[in-house]
Amino acid sequence: MNGGGAESSGRTCGFVASPYEATASFVAGCAFGPEAIATELERAAHTDLRPGFAQVDDWTWVEAHHRSVVVPDTMRRDVESWTRALLVAGRLPILVGGEHTVTAGALAAFDDPSSITVVQFDAHADLRQAYEGTPWNHACAMRRALDRGHPLVQLGIRSAVREEIGEVYGVGADGSSGLLLRCGPPPARLLTRSGLRDRGLDEVLDGIGARIYVTIDLDVLDPGCAPGVGTPEPDGLSFWELLDALERILGGRTLAGADVVELCPARDDGRTARLAARLTAFLGTA
Ligand SMILES: [Mn+2]
Image (cartoon, rainbow, N blue to C red; front, side):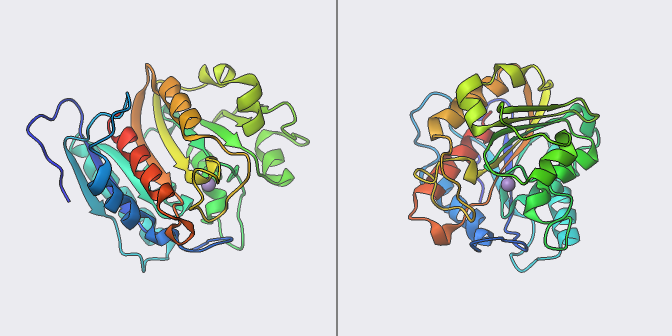
C-alpha cells in the first residue's frame, strides 16, 4: 500500500508490520493485528477531525516477515533491517505488531540507545529477565530495552511481579507511591496507573530526553474501550488520557520511532482495531 500524495509536508512515515507471535500468555491471535490495523488505516485514517490527527499524506506499508515466522532472531533481523531502511530514507518508522517482543527489532536499528528514551505505555511492566524459558518473551520486552542501554519511562503499569520490579528498581520496591525511580545507567522510571491518576505526568516528564521512542501496548487502555488484546487488565487509560499524555510527552521532543502492539482481533468487535489505526496514524504524523 502507498498513500503518497502531492501535498505531503514535512516528515513522512513508514509502517513496518511484524505479525510475530511466539509467546502469547493468555489469548493467542496478535499475529493478525497488523492486517486488521492496515484495513482500518485504508478505511478511515484520513477522515479524523480531531486536533492532532493530521492526514497521513505520504506513507508506505511493508510486511517485515510472514506470520509463520516464530524464531525471535529472524523476526528481530527482519524488523531491524526494515526500520533501518526507513531511517535511511528519512521516514519516521512506525512498527505495527504482533506481540510486544517486536519492539526489540525496531530498537536494534538505533545505534545510539543512550540518547533515545523509550516511553512505554502498558498495563504490564514487561521487565522479566526471562519468562517461560526465553528472554524473548513479550513479558521481557522492556528488560531487553534496558539491556541495550535505553533510558526507560514506563506509564500506566498496573501488573507486575515483585521479582521483576525488585531487580530493576531495587529490592522491596512495591510501587505503593505510584512512582518508582532508578538512577541507572540506564535510568528508568515507572509511574503506575494509579500514580498517573493521582500524581500526573510532571514528575516523569523531566526524565524524558530530547529524542524518544514510544511503544504502546494496547492493553494500557481500559478493556472497555480496547477489549481486543491478549492480556486485558481492568482500570486502564481512556483513549483521551493516552492522547493527552502523548501530546505532552511529544511536545518539544523528537519522535525517533514508535510502535503499536498486541492487537488481538479474535477478541475484538472492531473497536480496538479502529482505535489502534487512529493511534498508528496519530504517531505517524507526530
Ligand atoms: Mn507489553
